[in-house]
Length: 90
Length: 419
Image (cartoon, rainbow over all chains, first blue to last red):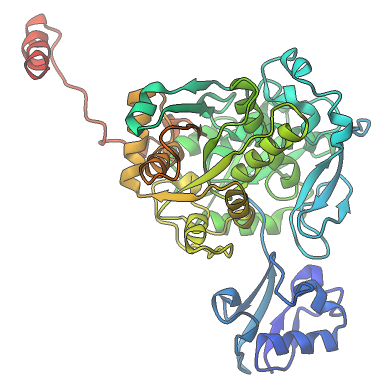
């Protein structure tokens, strides 16, 4: 199962788990599974239109899915997925 | 604690509009959107008149109702109100009818526009009870935090990439601040700061104090309008690192129109970057608002070398909505831009100013800024800070003995022959 790294501000929803094992063959499916396991997580990551929120980045093995296939990005069992809020600054 | 300002009401998420109290916080709990200062414009309008502003001292604080602090400013009371120069010789060189230079190379006290943002951030930091302040910086911000913290008696830490120009490093060290140089690019410095901020109860001007800090940039836009005789310039060219300055000048023009301080008029904002780190310009040119990070910036323009610009999305929308666009220029063009500004107007700008001048030249040459209209160039920092960029590129002094004969033979007669 692909592992998803959860950022600190969302760990209240994952019982403080930092890494969550999940299921799915695309990022979209992974988000569905995450929301089933931890209700409320989806709306923090994607907006009402189903798009990944502007200030949330999802990385598959350090590649931003915006530059892969967004929610259709395929994931393998061994992939590491990270959810990372954008960083302010500058 | 000061009595809450009747004008500055809340922090507000730019994404979902959720309101937050005026604390040291900078992102929305729900969607991670950036928080921005929100104002009660109905209360400001009757108070902040042209007459009231003109009666006040020549500093950025003459627009204080539009700045996010509760009481009187306690840091940087003399910052801002830098000259707006009518740049006729540069206008001729660039081939445009009317051109102005907003000259923040002489901003007080550290010779860059960053004194504007730091003045607000540290005044607010004191109101919130911080005694240690800090920043992630490409140099100018570090100089300003160090100097303003020193004069305010605050302890400071400035975190910078290790490869900055010597002038910018020395320009922080001299104030007795704690300079921490990081092996890595600005974005890595910034990432570290986001982990440090909050951990030790420090006020990070561009992290947990960013909603206050960023608003200081608006004063550059207010001053431009006032100095033009209370009108919004048709075209404004602005350098972009995070993109924040551009969004705030855009906001400033809109606020002045909303308050009736200037007439509603069409205006366009243009963003300028160095090609070696141009994530916002490249996204704009591709016709998208998704900014692709630049993992390894490669340019002499270190002050703009932010590969992951926090306000890239908003900068793109400010440019699009105003009918402006973005441009980027090579390092050679930057050097030419620095020299052109110096030779035409007697203003010595740092590399970011070279970016602005060279980008303006391209925008005019390609007809994006029409030749028969008027433009303002925002020049944001002094050239003495980035000498490495032009050393060896402006010629060398001609060396002679202290003798009249040598002067005549080697200087005067030679020059007369080529004149």
